[in-house]
Length: 340
Image (cartoon, rainbow, N blue to C red):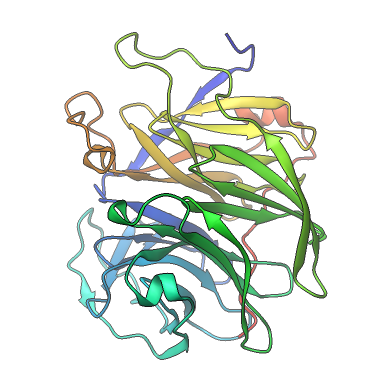
């Protein structure tokens, strides 16, 4: 049994997403954004007021990841087989847990015909994010009928060029960078490990890929009827370079120090599959966690995990249980923004 402590998150919004993903904080607007992939929805929440809006993009089958733009409103996004620009989200005006979706259209297609696998309908884009220079990197995954390892990993560069960085990917998922941009973390959920790479922020080249966190991390106390299982999904980094990775079908986020040792397990009570965390709030002292409905795991578990699909939060502020582990000098970090 792991000696790392277990800290419980709490439900913040009972939004019941199908597949909540891509969560990020906008310090300029003090708004939280995330996607519900199969519903093609962009969710926007004001955590202070709990005013909430949803934008729907029905012209695609999937809305898989988003990143804020550096100097303009709106977001860059990956959809099923393209990279697009989305308009500024609908301003939240209503306090509700189920806002009526507003149908929207993307503003511009930045990249299409990205790969033969996507063009032939054998896969779709999945998780993505920006490096410190503002490139948008995004990976793909195969569809169930396409077989394993047909996914790829791409970079949309500052000159609007798409480069395939590697192939033979199972399910491309979490990615993140240290503050200096020279170290990249990456998750292929099929491998179920977190990898670390040397990254050149000037050229966008990644090299020397090696294992950071191996499969089958130490367990935490769980219901005896639900075995410890799952795979790594999405991630974020804090201001100290700690890595916070979600465990699909494993009811937790694991915090890793840069040396790979475990800080703590953050449990999401009543939720089967957390998907991705981010830091937000006025001082970046709250972790928000997007989650998936239990039906996305192909198992009838919703009676045991009724909070699956809800949005969770954890306090990282001064005096909190997590902060006592991290120290007074700890800081959160936002995700990097898109330069286009």
